[in-house]
Image 1 (cartoon, helix red, strand yellow):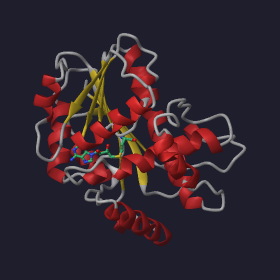
Image 2: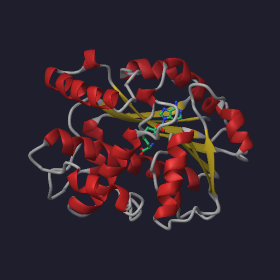
Image 3: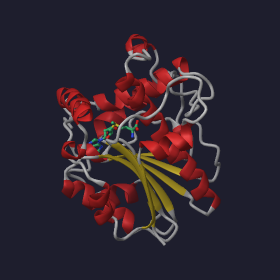
Length: 282
Ligand SMILES: C[S@@+](CC[C@H](N)C(=O)[O-])C[C@H]1O[C@@H](n2cnc3c(N)ncnc32)[C@H](O)[C@@H]1O
């Protein structure tokens, strides 16, 4: 991404989480009372223009995927905390609001993000009178040029405590080298640690109509200055995860079964492109 500019894709994801709070039928898949306030007046007009029409299935399917991935991460965090995880690291945190809704008083949270995105988020929070909780620490890092362990250590991260890493909406924007370097850092954490991430399948693995949807999304993120760079098939990403155990890799069928059954609206994940994955160190 561009060095001095906050992430546009982080804004677009946050707009869709906020739209979910306003437009989708209850029960919400991701109940996030901070999703709208964090955008404030600055983005109120963009939120009004965020596509929600039910006759635009691609847009509905994308919103479903985005709320499901945050919900999945937070469900896994609940499990991890019950098993002794004491730290939660959001890699590429964007406008994620979990730290402001955290129900676990003992949990230490580290938000790692590109410096320009993090500064912008902090300005939005200040503008919305949303103070940072005391157990949240910001760690500005550019994954392409800075070493994550050093920046985490400087932020007070404890490498001897089990940690869950959330890496949502970031993998497709990285080089393979940066992906592997960060995964290596996670793999070096103590037993009980884990990672939750989403990834996209390569265009060549998609059916024809999904290739068109992929091209449309790819050109929009390219225009936003954050081109897609990295895709995996499930087999390929499994090959990257040899240091991990208890790998769960969910496609749309499994995601819909878990989070979107019995709804009165048509909110659900479509297609085969996006997948959610978690993996643990034993
Ligand atoms: C699509 S947003 C997702 C944000 C957030 N995880 C969410 O789900 O709302 C992508 C995030 O990755 C971050 N990012 C992309 N490339 C990065 C890099 N090289 N170093 C650090 N952060 C990066 C952006 O700043 C942005 O916050």
